[in-house]
Image (cartoon, rainbow, N blue to C red):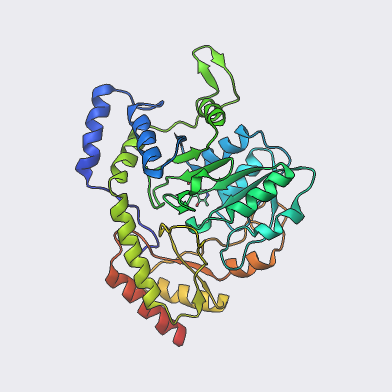
Length: 360
Ligand SMILES: *Cc1c(COP(=O)(O)O)cnc(C)c1O
């Protein structure tokens, strides 16, 4: 059986070493020493001044919307994980969907301006598969209309654009450290901002709005993460180069093996580095996708329609909206197995099978 994803687990004894420390200190959660150490090491690794380690990527998004005091309409992408949209609705705002770019599958920056109204407060865009949005174009529109920008960088760990971390862009960026993501702390998330005051506010929000034992300065939530999760993040950080190297190798094997497949790969931002978080292809037709998926399933090789369906047509709490490019691409997009423990032989097998299925 080949799953579509398989969480990375480090050697157990490396994790065990951290557990001994936790037992000694008896400090389990609430911004403990391992959480602080993880924040410090991630800042260094990602070359960032400010970030917070939080519960998960979804709470990170909700905290971002709350901290920026967004109201009314938020322009967003229908081609993302459901948390991008549900966070907007959860925070009492209204998602306004704009279609995606047919090459990058990211929010189409050229279509944003037409969707701005007097009720628009922000743009929330996803760096799909870790591929940076057109951050300059988006910022220009935001500046012109006085809008905030949040990036859902759940997939974008380690990506650099124009020589700096992708998380430096926008007012706030978030990342997910969920077990299925490229780099993980089992459950976890990051909130990133360049603005020190905003970071302080986010830190209060993370801890119920508490500023001292008897003072509350913000409407907060429990966005803290535990020492056990921080420990997994710390151990996994030691393997990130190795994880990256392996995923790059597997990606190149797919590229070579699938050259004759009737499909294209989303076009990567030319100013950005790649993190090999996903191997995603857009098939020529949905019929070909369904044939491939069904026959691969029969071989116990599992793929994922990610993202499908369009968020603008799938959510019971939102009025359905047709969007030409999103509807067409989301029906044809397929993510293939990609994870640290996958072997080159398995990738070659998957490629051979896919070509055989396509050709008969
Ligand atoms: C995984 C994911 C999230 C949610 O992150 P969690 O840590 O699972 O809460 C949000 N947006 C995107 C695009 C994701 O892939």
